[in-house]
Length: 466
Image (cartoon, rainbow, N blue to C red):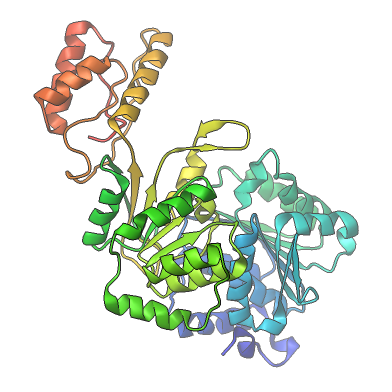
């Protein structure tokens, strides 16, 4: 049963109340209960307002977008869903086909056009921006749902999120992201340009809580520990496609699935045709319970990995940071292989927004009661962090170090103290490690060393694994 079958038969009967009741009925049939933020956002959309939705990852923004498409169809408007990458556009296209029926959903990307006259269109942000530039206010676009709206701030690609707001005053806008800051400027500007009220719906409460930890063991040992403690499925984050595939192949030595689970994978794959080259490699990996996922894969392979993951049959998925843009792969644990990436011009540390976007995919609502985020690190990286902090402290004169935060980690992953102490040398840190194996003793030891050496304010709290 598709959601369109719940539309009131008469267009005159399709007021905001009846549309909301119909949508709520469909949601209940899926075994889902709307969160308060979702209810508020859907009600605002049904009444014709623009909506800026800023809620944590895993809090159901996709369901709000579905409600928006439902309202637009009921009112006879054409609605566009935009996303930053083709992998996410493709995933949403198939999901909306299941919900609204294939005849009502189309897709436009730089290299594919499917049912491009449909009332619901999934497209990359640049495609919509070019339509807006060509046709402007005369475009047949009544509603725009912009996912991952924080890309507005990107220096290279932000224009694609800006242009539709400037050129489509006739459209209703739904702007969604988990990492938006102050949106007062957008609220007033949207209201001025479109003549509609603009509602801001925010929430800071995650439906599924997360725990954070560092791991100092080799990656395969970390994964074995996570599998043994039933924290699968696990997404291992890499920052290049080649390293993701290489890691997946290296994990073939770990037995991640039982015989029964491997039989279930083979049954779901059925007669799926794998081509030579990468196809054969992927076939061998997924039959072992290990997936690969990145934007460079053929859509049919990406779709297969997503289906196997949604069925709970893949225990480990090695992929890239495309996970951070909302790919619907249910993950309980996210493992970062590092915290730096090459951005096209230089190697840099992840921005806080990037980290939160990726880490927030752990623990998806409806699948898990809690999620885990694990960061692979080494004592050498802790020492480098300590040296950088020491240099910053020296340049700041006698300024008191700011208080940081530490993340707990299981004892097997982090033995002893590997703290990065801003005002103490590495040798002192090593002396503290030799003299103490627990966090509290380590802090006491470091504080006494710092006091004797005259460090301003003593050592700050650990920013590394302890």
